[in-house]
Length: 510
Image 1 (cartoon, rainbow, N blue to C red):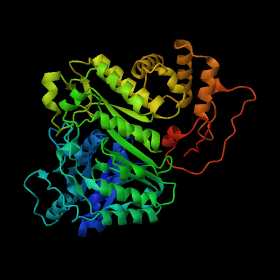
Image 2 (cartoon, rainbow, N blue to C red; image 1 turned 120 degrees about the horizontal axis):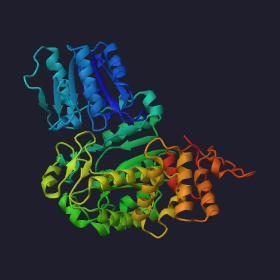
Image 3 (tube, rainbow, N blue to C red; image 1 turned 135 degrees about the vertical axis):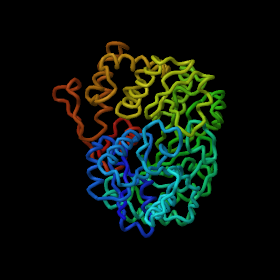
């Protein structure tokens, strides 16, 4: 019985931890199974061709918010060409109803954690006793009883892709927009067992670890042990943790302070700084603790911070979002990820729909279109704001130059005006080259804000040329002016390095 496990990743550098869990726990079927990973810009027909070349009896597909349309097309095409092949669908996008993408062609849909349920379904199909129900509700997995998947990252994965790991599952909080809140009990993988897996990956050459745990610092003793593992290693390396913003006791602080620049990234879930909004969505908010901890992380550590705000939360106006962004900027000068609210099946956000006039797109990623406080037109502007913010502010390419946009401290107001202007020039938020983006920023600072031309040029030159090997855009080139490259050690994650670097530092490109 030939089994193919497949999905579409958002990028080539990503890997599917979920498929590797399924593969790791296939027991007697493992030697007849194979993982095939594609990216969302892969032609669906090409992906189907690759799958069917293997002549599978069973195809397991992983559906997520970023690949739901591709998975739907894949199922439909597979059933047209090879109707006898059994398709088993799983993943977050398949696990919760209603399905807003057509998955009707799938023979079976596993709802919940499929680590064991997928094997059991394959076994029942193998012995010709298929289940009567199309939807299979998987039981919560005992993490001590399953095989961990890390041996099934290939040497190619190790050399070219991110390695995702998890030390726990579940989240103790109840944030309404998040599927993780549905599993309120945090289940840990036995720490010594997990550390041994990390050691094996390290010995294979892995130096970039992305933890997908929702609340890494919820259990401090475990968090300390995990940090100790990396602190004993020789840099360079890169570790990403998702943390809650109000739990940084002394023991954890001492460890965070020891990480060298660009080696530690902390994704700090903020979402809103408005107490009433946080209460609306059942999100814990301790504003004073957040201020205190962000100040510590910003001023006393070299950790790269990635903090989040969401546009469109129930009852939160644009004026309140403006206050949130302006305040958050005073707390952290690292990346501020501006997201647009999405309503995922399985969450309880729909209870706000009538009260707040919440209307969402029916297509992935199901982002909000409008509500009683934010019109459709304004929401469109905010989506462009978020995109340009990521390109200009979060990229680190314009670390010093971007400050001219809001030198008066009015971050939202200044950047909103710029996002409106730049969209008028481009009529697009995609496929804008770095050179063109730099020129547009220069023009806006010169023509609209009337900042001194020579000061803007010099600041842009310093920003752009901090990445070693870059060429200046034509409009910034002076006669007989050259920027000498400096030698630097090989390091990971140049985006983080651009945020950490001093004005005159250079950064080696990937």
